[in-house]
Length: 116
Length: 113
Figure (cartoon, rainbow over the protein chains, first blue to last red):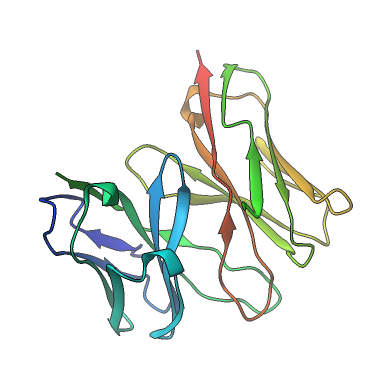
């Protein structure tokens, strides 16, 4: 089975630029998540979609971060404008809710963003 | 405040030894607890999980224990190997309609040969 595909793997941006990260979830998964990962803050939820509908938008990230799910097989995360503090690994994950059981995420390999 | 807490933050063990990672949570409505393993340059991957109706689940060298009264769980790795060196995340959620996991900050494990 194809896993979650994230592109690009690495991105270098100058402060103030707009960058777009891409994610293709596992086929058939209904839930899609964007996380930011840093050593200090761990995994911070940016956005959560279910069947393309936005379920949760990480409060602290609303102003410059915008995730969209254009169709069930593709999502983007736009950061506009970028700031040096946005340097982190951005992870996309997908899952399917199961009756009577918890959701198991499949994560992509992430995009490592450096803002200079 | 962190809803899921992990300790220790980092840990070094010798090859062949037993590793014990611990996790605690606040919300008593959480009833599903997966552990994820992450190697450098990769995303986290599901390692083992447990529902609150159980107190133990084993998968090869990995065992997770759950204590509902104390709201704690642990991950034990027996015969630890250098290939187990990774970051381990505890997570929690409620079964049912929501698919969202709450993650701890992780424990970085180094297994020395």
